[in-house]
Length: 193
Ligand code: A4P
Ligand code: MG
Image 1 (cartoon, rainbow, N blue to C red):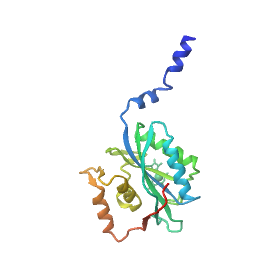
Image 2: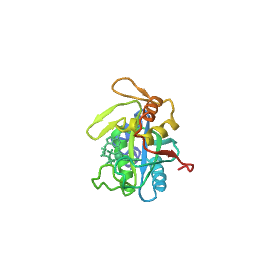
Image 3: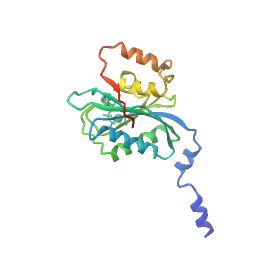
Image 4: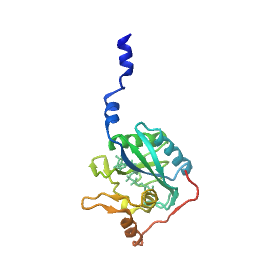
């Protein structure tokens, strides 16, 4: 009986113990959808992010309507950014995001930058730079995408983006982007998630 109580008090596994002792890191997650009621998809994803173990939603941007980057024969996207505090490692977080994508019916049909019910990308994970086979952080597309930079700026205008050289300010990245004439349409919507 005593042994059973001790076992019940024990945290479930080593992973749980490790993550409890890890420092929390701020992570910024990019959300995008252009299928099956995109606004509802984003709201559902935010709620799922809030329910993740070892994660807390700190803030969320407005919704942005953006023209598709990539193939043009697909609907416009709804994009947003969520700021999380997390004790998951970046790879654990990626797995959790992919589980949410799966649960929202994300299908990978092989079309590069094709339409999707929900896409969840790790844009930034603290000030870390990660370059592994299945994870690159900061997200490689971050500096070329208004639908990422604008909502990030809305959440944290003073954010610095780490690079191999010196960190770059969001403001500098936005100024650079606005000087290019290949910019895609991207505008905030009145409704929030
Ligand atoms: N992966 C590597 N780094 C990351 C990261 N930081 N976050 C790997 C998330 N995943 C990362 O992703 C392919 C692989 O990227 C994953 O298995 C993961 O190990 P995926 O979600 O299966 O496929 P994807 O999203 O189609 O690929 P890709 O090339 O990452 O596309 P993006 O960059 O996500 O862009 N236009 C508008 N207006 N708005 C959009 O949101 N999104 C895309 C997709 C294209 N056009 C868009 C939008
Ligand atoms: Mg993705």
